[in-house]
Length: 573
Ligand SMILES: Cc1cc2nc3c(=O)[nH]c(=O)nc-3n(C[C@H](O)[C@H](O)[C@H](O)COP(=O)(O)OP(=O)(O)OC[C@H]3O[C@@H](n4cnc5c(N)ncnc54)[C@H](O)[C@@H]3O)c2cc1C
Ligand code: SF4
Image: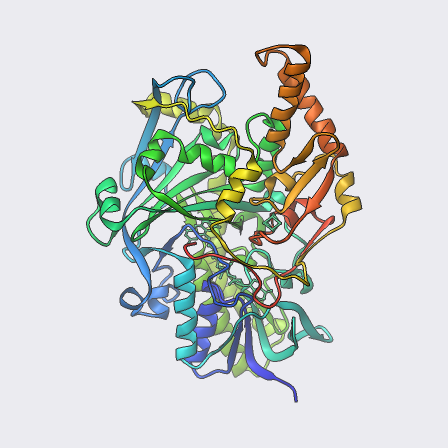
């Protein structure tokens, strides 16, 4: 018997749930397929959810009661952009000097509505904006789909599209084939379906942001006190600073009910560029986050807080990825899979766009059904509905000329801080910790819950090809310890900065020297020689499925969705 539905939606994130909810509520037969065992447990966001958007297409339009029903953390009442400089003193550990001492740094805080805000922020607040934790939020949203009659099938990875001639007529999961008049791809930034549908090739490093996040538990009252908030109120702080080491992007601090989310979002091409150019300073994405978190401007909020989660995920750079053609007969693409994400200054904005495009795709289905025609020609009405999103994306492309320019992140940044920033003084204690990246990451991934797939690895590495790559930059870029390199006679490394430090120490010892002096450049040269001859090692157990290795290492690395609900689970992301 053929299992045929009106619509199959792939992925129970905000985009997929919105499409499925809209259709199920209107009586259509919708099946929502999700690879995780529980929707949300594999997802990561910052995350401020902007509840309202283009009239008719916000969460508030889809589910008007969401503010009283959804598991929301805090209502965001204040937005701030903080530009900070590194505390000035000599030495390698910028925030952990050799002896306790007073250091100064500059800071410029730009609040919403201020004169400067007009240049750096887009109008952010909508009056219905909340911090959310995806593990809770997506679970709630998918239950809403079930409440209105949608079928939610979890632990089911969609691996391929089923075609009849030119037309998509269904999907192939890790277990079976399902059929529908329309398939809506809401599987996020790692979507392979858009490739299978011939709408684009694999994403490239310049098309993707990488996000790394930590969640700290502190308690509701203490968060209120430190951030000057009333009960239920929240703050969203965007942070820029030297901690980025030339990577284009920024950091964020968001208050949840009794936890604080702190993270960074950086463009992958600029991140791997910095890993190459500053191998002595930047090892892994975690190093950027650690440097931000240990900056006195940020650490004062986190003092005494308990780290409860570490996570990572990618986001499409909308203005470089949004599909010009987001459809083919029987098939539409929404949310991050479509590339509908926008980041401008402090605005990190994907969830409401996923919801809006989900609603638009659902309306397109209803239109096509009225015409009894799911061909490309009829589905093209989706392009008209998407026009406001394309406009936004074009605007963000223009804005990126400044907000993502080298000038802003280099000399321009320092000039702005010198002219407009204020000086802060802080006492920094020497807490230099010499643990390597493998140990530091193990400490964090030890907090996660795993369900290892012992028979199937969703990532396949062509080792011969991978080993031939002279830089192997997906190895340090992997946010966890899935990739390491084995350097004969030296050991196993996850970070090239660790390898550099090892080489520097060996050179120092062999020459009987104390300081780094001229040895630094010799150590850098030796590091890259080592990387070129090293062997890549891979272990999928701790993989958070961000897709970074695929973006950087393609075609030596092939990425697939995890089967059977296996993988890492998040509780707070
Ligand atoms: C660090 C970070 C900070 C962010 N901060 C913010 C913020 O503050 N505000 C904001 O609005 N946005 C933020 N974003 C962006 C936002 O999270 C995304 O834009 C949004 O989640 C996109 O929603 P989506 O439904 O399109 O995709 P996703 O949320 O990625 O959902 C995709 C779903 O599909 C499932 N899936 C994937 N492949 C398959 C498959 N083959 N078969 C079945 N299921 C599959 C996944 O498990 C997932 O549930 C942030 C992102 C990151 C990484
Ligand atoms: S192995 Fe690849 S997909 Fe998995 S966490 Fe590392 S970089 Fe991300």
